[in-house]
Length: 137
Image 1 (spheres, rainbow, N blue to C red):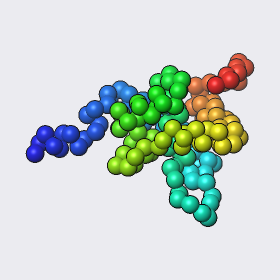
Image 2: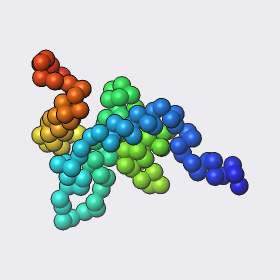
Image 3: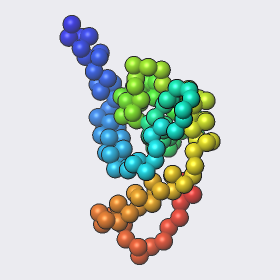
Image 4: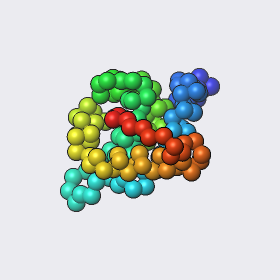
């Protein structure tokens, strides 16, 4: 019975360092201006766009260059998928779901999220406006 309880606790299968990193990172990102689900009267609700966005952050942090690598990673690290916001008791998004998300999302959402993060870092005193920098990522 104890063995079954341990197997059900998925946190044991992901390093604490990595889990804490993603917990803190996702807590720092304000997605309130980014609608979680597209407005649609027809069809299923689909996956949370917040979760898909967080998964792409994982993709960048883990230095994956292909969506297939991200999908493999999430399937093998269910706790990270859970931290992204996916229901790990159901199938994770397919390649085509990630592909549609990244192709159809308005770049303005990403710009607003980035702007809010920079302003938050400025308020915390981590950065100031004495240097100018540009990042095309």
